[in-house]
Length: 484
Image (cartoon, rainbow, N blue to C red; front, top):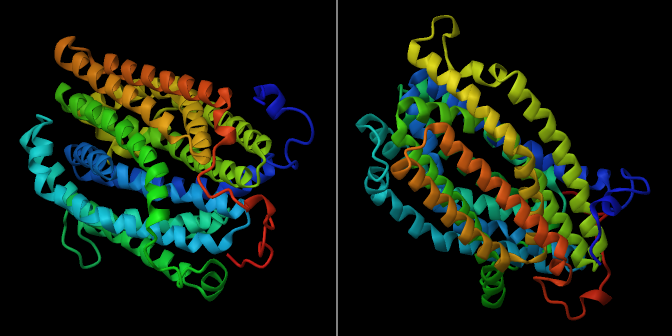
């Protein structure tokens, strides 16, 4: 059953065949644009904060990582609605899709009080980092404000699954990009005090992101309740709580959420410990990681497309097409990563130029930060292909429902990263470059692990939806008539 990489990607018309380049790109391109718009927004936000204060930039990066770590579990559960929607869509059961989306939204609202409680814990959380008093205050301020965007982040992720799970990813692109463009403009006005706003610095950056995320929710809910969607997918009639379906979403999405939580928590420990090496390593690492998101986020969008396509093809009981879509996406990811890694190696200043407002008159500290960030981008180039491998295969087996394996591996990997980061900084006294060797090795191990799991093929027989009667159903009802 298991195909070799050569067999899966070679032969026939690679572009036009089922699960070929055209199908993958049709689903992936809008998701790539959507995730890239978030990346560009975050990148622009970091650049504007670096003009305001290098310390503020590094603090916003640390606080944002912690915020995302807090959100990871419920975010992973809510986003797993994609797999349910994709498999119901592939199995020809559109009447179940609205119910799935509302269960994910109720789950998002259920987690909201717990997430908001972390506002009270912010001083304790960032006190553990041992950063300077100025960094500590910036981190607490940013975290407390952006946490008010947490319900919006979760609800938007759940609502977006209605479109992305059915392959209507251009809707996700439109909503997310519109909100992110609004966010960038608002950040500029609120950070520096233009357009009638007071100068708010790092608080302005946090409020801009928060308002932008709530705008995203409003747009998704309006689209979700369009008359066609209410009629075909029952998006209003099934605005109710379904205990059985919620349990299944939690059963399969819970391990996916824990995987995100563990991965990001290990990375968060790494970032917080890195801050103890001094302001120059902290700022240089913040720059390098912000630039690396330009490589990572498009692949994240491609990985989301893989999860959708694997779910749809397994819903059709076509595991061969699910495998082919995965390998097709992998080839695309490798092509992109090779290009951007070469740019990191040969023209790094192209990405770092904007972080300093006055390139002609850099201070010795700013020069040191920029020189170190240039070297750190070499580490990013060293793990980019492995990062792409990891993202494609972990999303492929997520699309099938193999989330328990993902959880077990993530526990081991997150523990390793956190433990070796602590030992590297506190015991072995690694330099910043030694610490970055750790993160590089961690990505390599994760990539190889999930590639092997995919090749073993257990995912081919897995499903998250009810299977009784699904094979007799009309495989793709109402597809031609769907306006969105």
